[in-house]
Structures are given as C-alpha cells and as structure tokens.
Length: 261
Ligand code: PEP
Ligand code: MN
Image 1 (tube, rainbow, N blue to C red):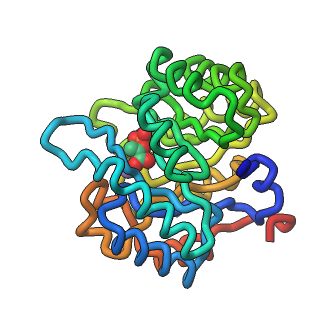
Image 2: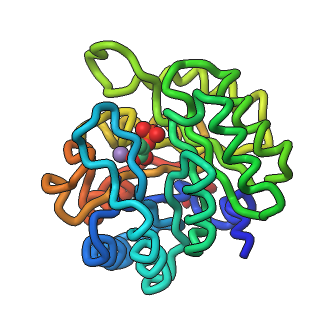
C-alpha cells in the first residue's frame, strides 16, 4: 500500500512526528513503546532499527530479520505505520516482504552511491515511501545525489532527514547541525519535505528542545525523535532517547506558528 507520506505531511499539524526506539530489542519492548506513544502523543510513524550500522564491532548490531514482524505487529496493534533503516538489497526485500510501510536510508549509507543505487534498484517498480538521511559528512551533493537516485527509479514519495554531520570532538553536539546544508537542500529540492532528527544531532537528552525548536523555526516539516520506555537501558543510543512522556512534554514546549496550531 502506498503511504504517500509526502502528501500526508500536509494533513498533520507540524511537527509531523516520527518516534520509536533507536533499535527494536524484543517484541515486548516495541509493543510497550508503541503503547505508551499512543497514550501520550501518537506519532505519524513508528520507527525502529532492525539492522544497526554501528561504528565499531562488538556493539549491538540489531536483532536482524526476526525483529521485522515485531515492528510490523506493533504498528498494526496501535494503528501506526512503521519505518526501519535498510542498507542493502537484502534488507529491502526482507522489509518489503514483512510489510514495513516506509524505508529509511541511514547516514552511513547515503555516503555510498553504490549502496544507494543497489537499494534504489531493489525498490524500482514499487510505490514505497523512502526517507533519506543526510550523509555523515557535510556534502550537500551526496545528499541530493542519493535523493535523485530514488527519483530516477520512479520513487515519488521522498523525504529528507537532517541528522547532523560527523565532526571530531564537537564541543556541543554529537553531530554538527550545519543548518545551511538542509536550508540549501530546501532551496534546491523544493518538492522534498525535510524532517529533523534532533536525537542524532544532539546525542543527549538535554539539547533536544533547542534543536527541535530551531528546526520548527526554519520551517522543517517534522521531527524524528528516538523514544524508549527505559532510555537508560536501551541497547543503542541510550544517552539520547527519551520516554514517550518526555517526548509529549517536549512537543508541548515547542513554539509554533499560529497556522500550525
Ligand atoms: C538511527 O536512526 O538510529 C541511525 C543509526 O541513524 P543515522 O543514520 O542518522 O546515524
Ligand atoms: Mn540511533
């Protein structure tokens, strides 16, 4: 089924919200998170990493394919379409077969045109929605190029996600926002909505509101926020995840334009 996220974005009040854990850990975990999200602030999309691109070996690399039905079932149970990261054609086939509604391309994949093309070829002919995170390095053209590869195989429902850019020992953020880059993308690809991922920019819980507010001020369409019922016990990105209750508080504190409320 075509989700048409790009078109649905307009039907939701800003921010269009994507929430869920960094990683799917078990069926119970993703069910509980979805349950609480629905109670506090039902997101438009439930996210959950199944294959995790970890920087170093010996970290948790995701539950893999067996977690796909857990994510899909949680989405069905609570009436939220689901999204996961895919990094190769095998991931795409498994995710599509399991019924994942939206695919996202991670920052470490967007840097690699071979990988992006392989994924684009694997979804050619489908009507799936694709979200493309910026590459980890501050290269606007690589980001644009990845989006164009999906356009070229006929994917019309495309979203960009700004998750910041990798730097050595950044004093403030885990990934520098370099706001001028998503702004340039907005100017050059007017038709593609942009969502901000403050979780991966900030890297901790404290700065999430500031970065989310900045994204709203810059007219981003939405936010992707990592959410976990027990953030400190999360198997990946524990420092930056928030509970569904905290997410609701954060959204409540955002100052929005009159027409968004
Ligand atoms: C994630 O969203 O958990 C993730 C790994 O994202 P990124 O590609 O932005 O690092
Ligand atoms: Mn993460």
